[in-house]
Length: 536
Image (cartoon, rainbow, N blue to C red; front, side, top):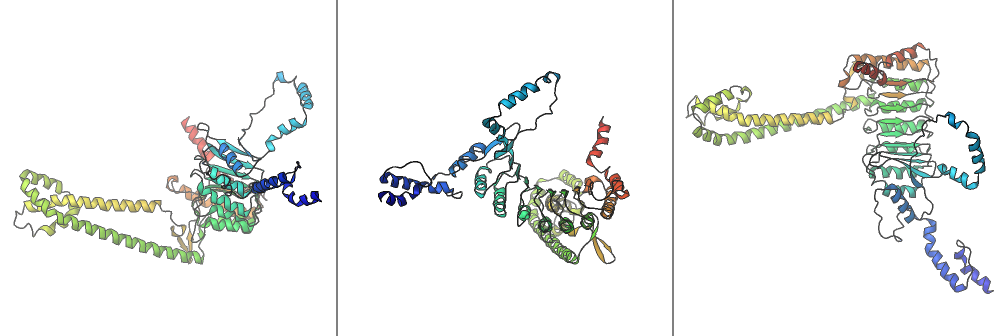
């Protein structure tokens, strides 16, 4: 019965089998097991502080920091940080190696033991691959492939990634992201260095398709790849709204890769709606999707002059009124500031004039006549001082006033010119809303020039027929004509590369051949060849 009574007390020994001792030792081991239980359960990140009260200070070496933080979090087996393997050079067999294959095959068959197989499959073990700068050996890119990244691992990354001052890209391929872990990952991005501009999340389908959160207004991402994520029309709608709406617009994203998804005509229409008012995206790939003619026509429509909707016209009027009030208030403020400077300068001139009269002689008056003769714009204010100086000579007094007026008036001019230059700089740095671009009125409708900022559009392997080709042919013809009438240095001129191959039309189609002919001289590669020939 004593053995049976000791059974409940030995229950904490269940996770630690192997030893049987007296009841006193059992209770001690049970207490020790209870203390170690939180470590075995792996509590969330941040609860290891009672075990390690001192916060670990990351050194900027990812391999050391990640291993130390994983150990402190209770991990015993965690991925290693390794350098990303480079592709091997092309193998060229030689004549001297023709005699060795038989011997190598014998050695390989003799060494096929369990240990050798495990060593050969090290490649498939979870790792964190990093690409280093060639000179400084700082971490430049991070690649994680094929193992599940949990929220606790992201918590560790939030501590060891910010010290990486040269980090430029994070690539997560099939890491089992969820909508919750995606939100944790997005919160991690602002903590990283400002050099981080590229994020690739491929092979991570999400039930809620919340990828649009990566394109928020405060997102630092400039290059985003979302291939193989099963994004459908609903996900494309969220992404299109993240590109632009009437009241918001993404101004940091430069390239977006949505290839190998399930986007159809409706989804392509949502992406086209996002391109209506977006003037930041330069590169867009919708290859290997399910886009047909209707979606292709909507995409082609926004790349040439298109009609504004009623809500867009109303928003344009509101923006014009707002801009007019701002310009009026700015002009009033600048005029008031100019009047204040004029008053302060005119009140200081009599003292300077009296001193100048006592010191200056006839020669100085002649010099001032010569210097003041070209100050025709500044001859208005000195007339106010005529009554105070009427007792002096008619010849000397006006000239002295013009010479004294020269100093304050030129200073006033400098201040005015400085204000104008600052206003011009402010207007140049501000991004112009596409609704405020020059418009064209046709039959009571308002047309804007269209999106000419997008340079690359990839629609490879979709379901576009000759009907959709006609829309792109009209777009390419318009942009080619527009680029001829405008110098390239004065702004964007439209598409430089358009990929429409492998769709549902013949490569010998006349519309497709015309598109190829028009796009050939616009491609950057073909433009570079004549320049190289000129230099040679």
